[in-house]
Image 1 (cartoon, rainbow, N blue to C red):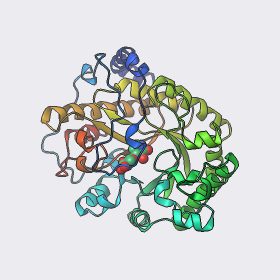
Image 2 (tube, rainbow, N blue to C red; image 1 turned 90 degrees about the vertical axis):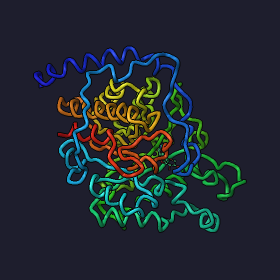
Image 3 (cartoon, helix red, strand yellow; image 1 turned 60 degrees about the vertical axis):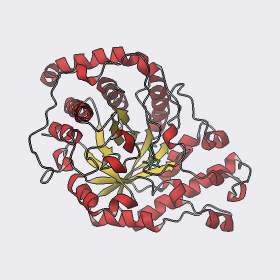
Image 4 (cartoon, rainbow, N blue to C red; image 1 turned 90 degrees about the horizontal axis):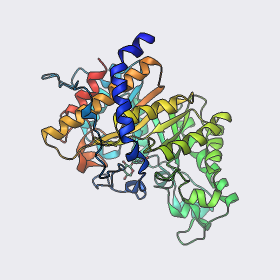
Length: 408
Ligand code: XIL
């Protein structure tokens, strides 16, 4: 262990310098992850979650140039998930469109061993308004498009990350309102907690009954905190229930989840200090109550923010709490689709994975799963910034080789 730390000395020192230099960028905080407050179509271009300021940000290019695309290497015969076996699972998100594309489907099966439904297991996909109104109670109905993905995952021996039970976004407003009506008034705390428990129970019982062993994890609560202030996000959940909506969500999830399903708190921009502190405070409380198994770092990154150093230190800080860390929605935006932009992006991916593996080897991190938020750039929710490993022609980009290289 000592030896490994020595060998990594140079790199870690480089990271340290970057961290100090970048701390002012992080402290600048940021606005809402506005791209996700409303559902957008996969082809739309949501606002990136990254913050750019006029402060010159030292880029990962300050690090030793180690990235190099292996010549004429073909993806065929290489499996990212196999290369990272022993470290963490490697997954992607899927949706009905990508699954109906035979070449993308093939690529998914070739490269990944876990999947997350991009939108199909979110509350707005599973809650049925007319059924709720008719029954005047919570009614969960798994639609055919969700069932098709889960059946497919089961058939191909892929594990599934459940995403997401309690979130302010992609949860219909009427769920919080009297009679489940669009124009109803907000219900009481007591009613909302009943609805929360009923929703979580129905979703998890359905999964336990129909797909035993398929779901390895669930994101129980997503994005409860603001970036800049680290305050609770002023969501309907927070307004109606109060701060303890998070604890209740985890209590109910623990009560109904299968024993081998791990429960996660999931968020973006976790490397912003105020937000990181807020998340860790709540997670510590949940650990005390044995209600949580890990933190999910969404990881919607950009080649210029955050620094790889700040990112990896966040992984370390969460790991120090003694729980699992999963990278749940990794993508790295870049400015263009020209060669230079793709190489810079490849370099970022390369160094990110280099540090992930180095920290795993040192025992400084506890990453158990990593999910890339999509397969090909043109199907990404941030498609205008080309954030993924494969281009629109499904050809591997430098980003792919950057990831692959570290596994060797
Ligand atoms: C995104 C999906 O990729 C889009 O297709 C959808 O329109 C909006 O949501 N954080 C999350 C994910 O937790 O659920 C979001 O996914 C991306 C940000």
